[in-house]
Image (tube, rainbow, N blue to C red; front, side, top):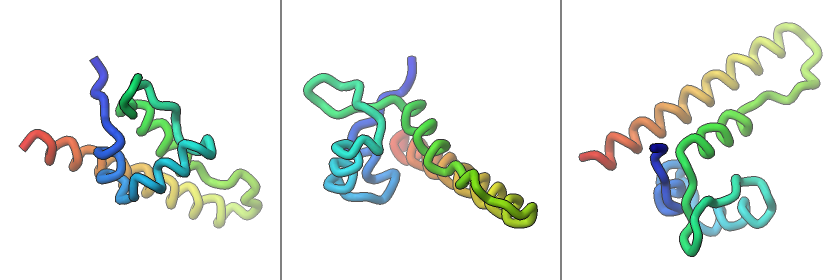
Length: 93
């Protein structure tokens, strides 16, 4: 079964306030909650959202810029995954 994360956990993990998350949700920039009566998401939803958010702008024209954008994207995705892993480990302790 997939691990469920709460609004509080996501805010701690991403380093944002609950108000920021609320604005993202209202604007449609954040995945829909799966919770009824309580805001909850699956880890997979959040990981996919982070990967999507870290996708580079597609109109990069030069080869060297494209390589740098791809490198930056991979770095941000890796950083997000490490952050999630650290968050999981902290919850277990």
